[in-house]
Length: 93
Image (spheres, one colour):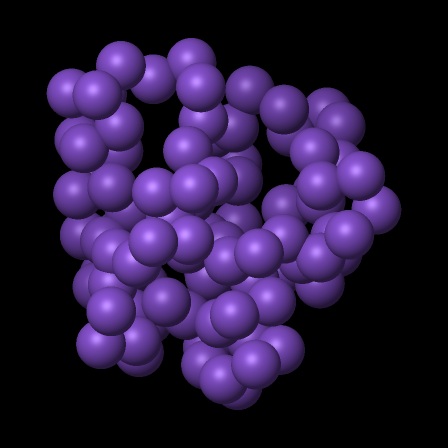
């Protein structure tokens, strides 16, 4: 497992917020943008289901992924982002 790849397939080493956050693997889902709460994706994947990544879930990509969308993405960019994250999960986990 690559420590910089989050359970949802985000490459934390390439994130524009890496100065504020070490990634969900390092902080067990309590990333800076969740206000001290566990990330909803991390909670579902790791805490609730005990998965190593979202790749183990039959609902991938699920409603939680849609709800936690980065608002900077257009619809097209978001769909491409999801596809890229799933491909990265397949390579990593």
